[in-house]
Length: 78
Image (cartoon, rainbow, N blue to C red; front, side, top):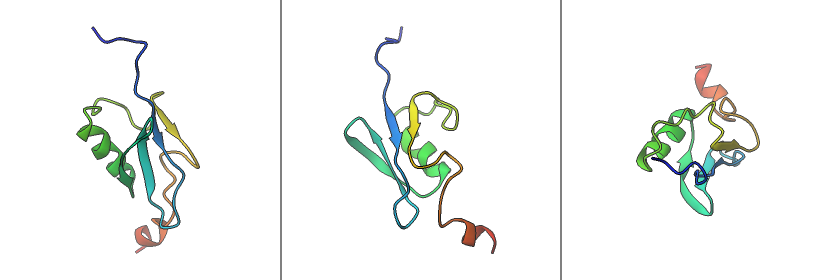
């Protein structure tokens, strides 16, 4: 049975100048995300693939939520 007192604290940091966002667990950098799919993949690599990235209380979004990826809009408009 999982210990409910110990949950990972995942932080998706505010976007950098290039639009990428650092993903950390406590003081450990897990990876650099340029898109929501990158966050999902980073969490999968650390066995947190069952986490609902956009809705989980385990994830703290700083500087914008899961829909905020500056720099992507010019690519999406084509």
